[in-house]
Length: 186
Length: 285
Ligand code: SF4
Ligand code: SF4
Image 1 (cartoon, rainbow over the protein chains, first blue to last red):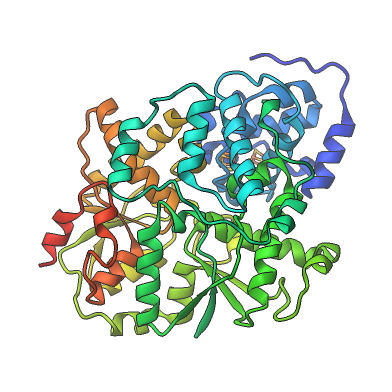
Image 2 (tube, rainbow over the protein chains, first blue to last red):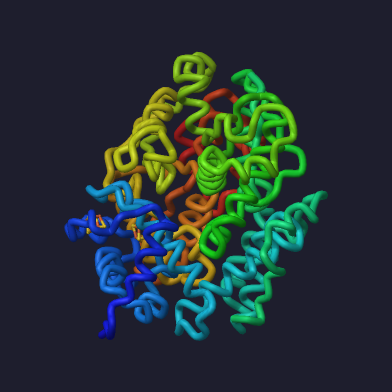
């Protein structure tokens, strides 16, 4: 994948550094973050490259690449980084900022959909039923038989059930949401 | 000792055997787990991915409810919930405004001690008390203690080592079992990507299972619902893809504690595991 730098946009970097409480000038470019990263081989740009992309202000690339979405928040990078740069927090920031972008491409849209459906459950019930979530996800992505065999086995084992508990003070939980989650945006 | 208990959504659903066995062994250790009334979901990896403030608020409400119970300590068996609560607690310390919304009497929500159940058991209760309750030593079991991301990031977790953790190994050895030295004890299973990117999770779990097998373990021991579910329920799919037969039971550490304390496999929910655990149960007879 190539990227266009154009004119360097410091604003994005400054805002990110402030929000994530990081100083990217401290990055040694040593690559330890990437070396330990759980999903580096699935990423368009590895964590070390992401830091450099932020430094040169390649906002467009940062907003459209799959990296933050396939990051599994395992937090190995931040513990290995000699400069203590909080990469998982940067990934959170990039996810939040790039949410508005449509069509992240295959492999990413599904991840976003999953998060949206999960938060929709939290909004609706205050708690998440894994069964309901899996079913909804499979329906929405048209994979009606995905893991169907596994589902049957789990049902027999009593591991999954269509029932789930609900929070009583739902209004309080809902008040934490900026807006009602709407999966149609995906 | 009274402890506020935050089970998390999985413990109410797919990981019921974790919750069930945790409650049994804690009772045996005179730990009174009191479930937080009306707790809400921590938001898993989705809330912090979409909206940091949402994640902080979800955690803060749970901490405030726990604070009202005046136990001074809250524990969760789920590492994701634990990290979410702990992150929220740190956020509350820094952010007075956020704190103000939630103070409702009792222990202040940012002062309550947040622990993972493994931490509570090994640090607060202690290995000596645990081993003194053992009636059925787990001799003959060779186990791979699996921590995944539980001890990371060190700055927030503040317990054990981020990459070479030992607490679970020591606990299992205290129960009379043997633990293997292996490469993947603190590697990530892919967690929440299981639904949306099953391919990635199958890769990661395949490597973890293979490492445990090569180290000669007869079972993997988990301290996380997501890890247990991924490693246990995806085993057949990995087998179908790679052709390796693992047949490695993936059990919760609380289930093994329960066995060592003399509880029946059924009462500990061994029947709910997908990969047949009877080979390891038979070794113990
Ligand atoms: S580990 Fe830290 S210092 Fe090294 S390249 Fe990654 S972010 Fe930079
Ligand atoms: S937290 Fe994300 S970026 Fe960091 S090592 Fe894990 S997967 Fe890679």
